[in-house]
Image 1 (cartoon, rainbow, N blue to C red):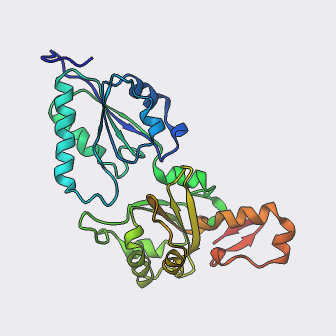
Image 2 (image 1 turned 90 degrees about the vertical axis):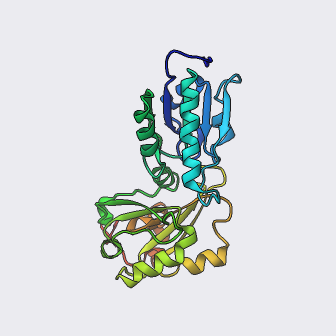
Length: 287
């Protein structure tokens, strides 16, 4: 319980809320929420998750989401101070974050701050959006028959809202041998696609977008590296929630599953455009 003049610092738990579906919370995350005195939560946390917090606890929305117009550096500093202030009151604090705290969640920065101030801290992992979207859309991020032996998780934009500084040539060279998942990349989709093609990535590399992964509002769009920007405009895709970009051979896995479910259709038709750059071998797709 919180109390003024507490002799001990209250513990802080950095808790991953998962990709959106409340049923994907871990048991430990549920327990920490049920025992919390104060919860600092991101703005995209579902109400069903917040309802697990006791009525007597204090909920504080810190408004973290992609495209937040507020200065992120100042906002993060405020979050640090709120965690510390409530810990000093002896409160059991939960910092509730979308996805996983340590995957583009700034959990490392918060852990550094809390440790430097001797605050007892625990990290509770959550299912990151890439894994949630992959499972929900039935798209394995690795699959033997598709020659995908690497998974690359990357952010789609820098703090300055420009392309992030990374090895785009290497990413392009491995486009058909790995699965790359871009977080927060929709606004720079045209630049991402153009940059990868400039560095040699095949235009027919399968690509898919997933909006609001694992939620009832989930939508997906399938195309290729060369055609996706046009498809997004045509479909007016991505206006309702956060979007993940999945690039690589397994992005066309739903078409592969459809062909397995309808063998007669598989014999009568050619592979769809989304399967360009891959071929059927022994009942499996292979690059």
